[in-house]
Length: 149
Image (cartoon, rainbow, N blue to C red):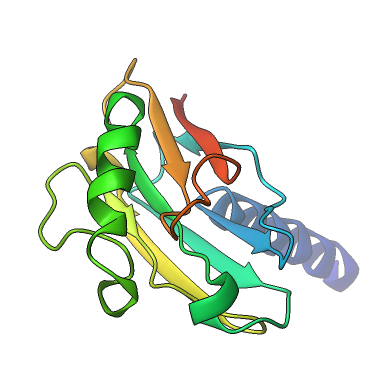
């Protein structure tokens, strides 16, 4: 009986962890201007979604910094261009830019940053893109985000 309860509790706890993990993702970025996650699926069942960006390289943020910026796919180019003009001290993101759904700060080698946003900010059927807005990076460091059941 006790063993059954332990197994049942373990399965219940493991199920909870797996469900919680569905509402978050960790992306690793490098000194080679790459990251390891070309696509993210966000479940409609999540109230919030968290993205943790890690930089496994060694170069400083002013040399090879990275951030994670989420916009509608149609807004990527203009948002990236406007962000580059803002500079490092503003994380290469235009302040109060309504096209930006969420973004992390610029990080350098060995650093991480997390952003959490409301899934209700996403619309079913909309195409979303994420990218690094450090000057010149968005051409290579981009991905898609999709809202799924």
